[in-house]
Amino acid sequence: MADKNEKKVRFFDGVKAEFAKITWPTPKEIAKQTFAVTVISVVLGALIAVLDLAFQYGVDFLIKL
Image: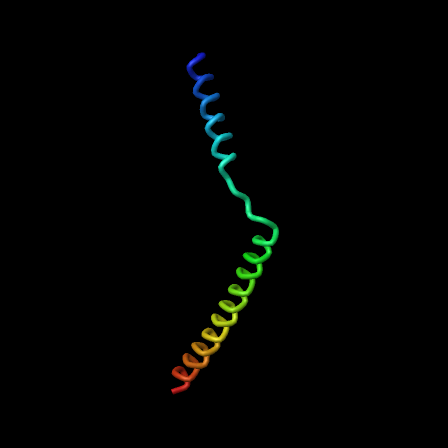
């Protein structure tokens, strides 16, 4: 039983050591990354909408033939 407890303690000591290595982003970095993700999402959403409309008109044209 002591062996299991010792393994748990070593595991959590390792977790604590790994958490100490983490470098968290600054609020400025988070803001920049959030802005970049938002802009890319909007641009890709618009691109997908334009392609969807183009394909819709193309399919409608082919159906009317």
